Amino acid sequence: MQSSGLPPVISAEHSPARLQEVISGIARTTRVMVLYGDVEVQQGLEQVFDVPYGPHESRRMNLRTLMQELRPTAGSLAMEHNPFALAALNKIMTERRIAARSAPTNALSQFLVRLDRMDRLCLAISLGFDMSGTTPSSLDENTLMLHGDNRLLKCCGPRCPGLDAEATRRFDYVFSDLDDVHGKRRKCPYCYHKFVKDSKKKRRGNERTYSLRPAVDLQLAESMIAGTGKMAMMEAAKSSQLLLIIGTTLKSPLLRELVQDLADVIQTGSGAVVLVHPEALQGKNLFNCINFHLGLEPEQALEMIEAEMQKRTTGALVQDAPIYNELDFWVDIVGNEVPVEQRAEEPLWYGRLCKLCGYGDEEYLVECIECGADYCYRRVNYDESEGAEYDNGYIPPLDMPDPAGEDSYCNVEACLALHYFTADGRRPPLAEALCHNPRF
Image (cartoon, rainbow, N blue to C red; front, side):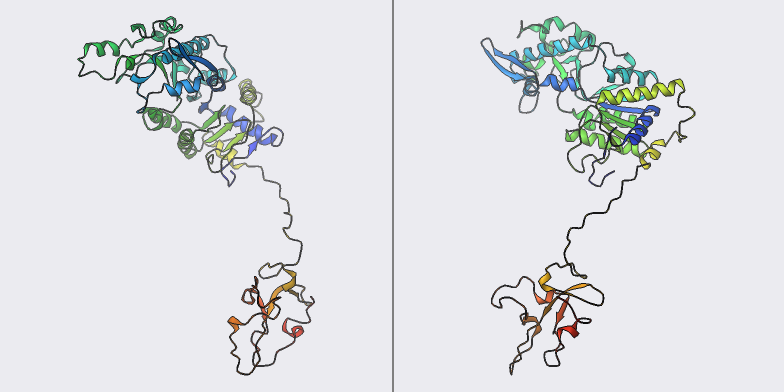
């Protein structure tokens, strides 16, 4: 680990042996925790749409802005949200939901499915909010989605239970167009009925409060920071040997804090944290919990891991595999750091320097002909007139260029002060004052 807190980037070009060692460690780890980001989600958030705000009004904005605008907060209550904009959000997210059901599985999905089938996956933590329709139920149950799940709908009523994936699917046709913006078909079937039955004094919010919306949030929910979600992640970390972070840069401060907490638990149990991202991290002392940073694209890293797992499955590495303690082999890998090549540093100064303090102004350096060392010096100029007071602290140096000007190098700062103790006695020549005959 580097002192700056940033782990060195391990690449196939500069550290092939170290890279292969870490890849092999990932492939043989039996208890893995995976934190992954969805690149397609981030790209989709920047897509621009024409969002209606009334029968004859529309605005152009990207999906990220629309989701933030319709996020219920203390300053932006759900009852105040524009129903036309909410209908547009539901339509956009419904189209994403339908597309995700039939989307082909990518390399990361296949890797997670394989870990789940091999019973190696402690927990998958997703930064996306879309899930493929082909995801096995066991993997679905073992996946925690930090930003919510687009397969679910909910309203903003108090203690809304939300709609499950099957009930949400039945609303796809309703949300696929912008008709019936104010109609009851878009209201929560659980909470809106109670809202209508309650007296006006007991009602909370208005009808807009109980309009259905995607159960997603671009900000981390409180339950993921300090609630039940956080407890589930910390419990899974206790049995994990590895936290594999792939496809995300950890830009969110809250996400970095979460990773730090998970890393503390995993590393205490002799595990490790591996980040897979092609770019170098930015920000000192923000990533000091990461043991290895593989400078690879996620697809490239997953391909190497899959190949290594396949070799171990077929027994191709049985004879050559190193013998590790299965409980703490990551400690051996972390400690097996390849030594850095030692090179002599270029000197910062090629001129003469005082041997004692490193002062480099040659005007005030004198060389001993016996040992060849240089020393900085000043010569005291005493006032030898009759009745003069010899106060060494206020006597100007003899070699000061201009006694009336400021002297940036006071005689009290020099390592050698010649003539300092000879005010009323014999004053030796400079040749006798310093070892032997000095040369200037």
